[in-house]
Amino acid sequence: MTLTEQVAKNIIRKLLKGDDYRIEVVTLINAEFLQFAIDFFKKIVDAKLQSRYITVDWYKEAFLNPKLPAKEIAINSGLNKKTIHNMFNSSTKEIIIDAANEHYDVLYESIKNLVETEHELDLTLTIKFKNVAVDLNVSESLIVINTLAVKRAELRGGLWSTAGKRVESPLMTTLCKLYSVDNKYYKAKFKKDNAKGFDREIDFYLLKDGKEYLCEVKLMGSGNPESADAVIARSTNVFVADKLSIQNKNQLDHLGINWVEMRSKNGFMRFKLALESLGIPHKDLVGNFDENLETIFKEIFA
Image 1 (tube, rainbow, N blue to C red):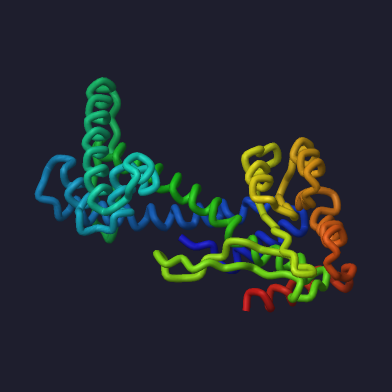
Image 2 (image 1 turned 60 degrees about the horizontal axis):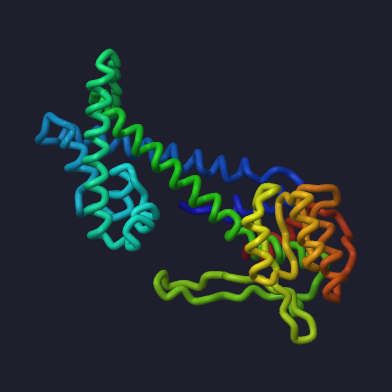
């Protein structure tokens, strides 16, 4: 699950032009989900054909197999890894396997009772692959549908969260370069994530006379007080958002926080006011905007 460089560019381009960037994330979610669904259906055909069982136990044997990655076991049971961690304050593989099996058994019993109650309902899901077809009864179909729903929810949550983090530094760098801010006046701080083994960016700063001015990007909808409160708590100096409510703006103005609402009249151009307020040397916009943007993208995504 990755938010590609091209998608990041598309999001930044739409933000700078005051357009809705969400279609880029939705398109990525759809692509990821449909690929998962196709691969999942192929696995179902293979698992049911090879199963030793004539009951729904074939699903549990194949898709809750302890040899699978913990994340897959959780999804296949109708949970996700984050939910299990929140429930048990841990997400070791042993805990995930236990939680997944327990949840699956409860889910199966719930579906079984539902099917017995709604005895007039008849549903058969047929999956064909390479001239081979398998039929899933009502209970099996509902388990498969539930797994697909959980996976899509996981993708949505993960990619929406990733979108903001992925574009924060390149968006801020693009804004600085559009106004010809010398790179000595800004920086992105990185922190080593030992668990994952790579550098993880945490903050972007504008710099002047030894002072660091924290910048924050939140691709939130207007009227989201939680994100605004987080900005205040972190002593942010420049706040860049997709949309802001009048209440958000008044609150930020009262606290002396420079804000930029991308999807509004003049949109990103309000960043110039932030530069002026903080005394960051810069120049007015010059040249063709689209051509300048492509040149900047080549530099920062090199």
